[in-house]
Image (cartoon, rainbow, N blue to C red):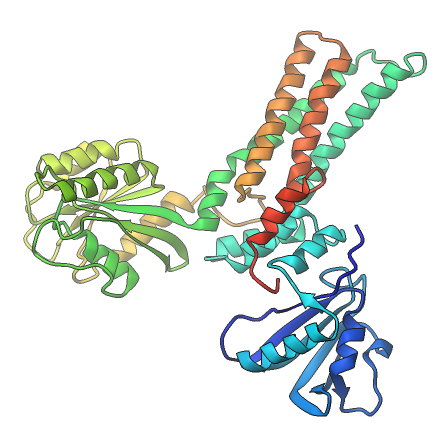
Length: 459
């Protein structure tokens, strides 16, 4: 696809800073910037310089100098977009950046749409669609695991896996079609055994990739962590302790928290999406009961439940109701208020919950190291550890993999039932097409536009 318009945008973050960047890309990028750039070396023109060079000078509007800048020239095809690209490094005030951008647009460029530079990199074949999506994941990474996974995807880890599987599939599609067209010279004798081996290998590989999604989602989005407990157990105090600030109101009055409070935190390298909930108890207060019901619903969808038990009080039916809720969930039991006299029966709690408990004090911060280690052991020890393993972190990719998996399973069933070989081709092509959605080889324009519309401006 040939794109002729030259686009420009501010690529650095909004707000004043030491340096701001304006990116210009397209056939006329160098020519446009040449009109407004005055080099400190007399008569130097950007169209004559080598690619990947930096030049010092000024941006001028007629006789008026707007700013002293560095200009970086990157000529096609060796640029991010695959087009001629110029980046202008200005001083980082928003006013000067807007003035320079307006001048670039005045001289022939148009304002870029969100994600349009990366979209052009995709359309020009510099990266595939999975790599393009990894760009935004990289920018939005909340922890080291997500950062490393996004970087590997940007380098092509997912693309390589998908291309290997597609290569196997297209070989067999071509072989079947050729054999059916020219049975005299291409024999299908013993072919079922050959295709069965291919199916076994790739069905297993696709299933493995699908199974990485839950861990991949946790790496990308953080662990959805729901704090449960009866009123005044110390849930809001725990939230404040984890955040390091007084985010939730803490009082001695039961039922203070009636709705959920959500915060994202980096807990010593662990990304947690913390949700504080209303205290679970039987209540006649309609508003509080709505909060209690909401807490139960959220708990069902959580990756991790932190059950806060009030150690200064004996266990009651509210505690036992929560224990029922967490029976089949990843859960940690905290016995809070260890700074007070512990009345709760620890051994009974261990027996009913089927878990070890952590003795904790949200007031003094005691037990935080044990809580952190428990979360690490639960989610990152042998389950989500960063190495060279490929993780699927994108729901769109998972959906496409599931479609390909179902199609290959149909082929396997057809082979086992002794169906004619031409039946295989239909489902093989469906699998090939589904996998193509991941890397953008079978994707429609509307989906491409939707994906890139979610990007930040200037990327």
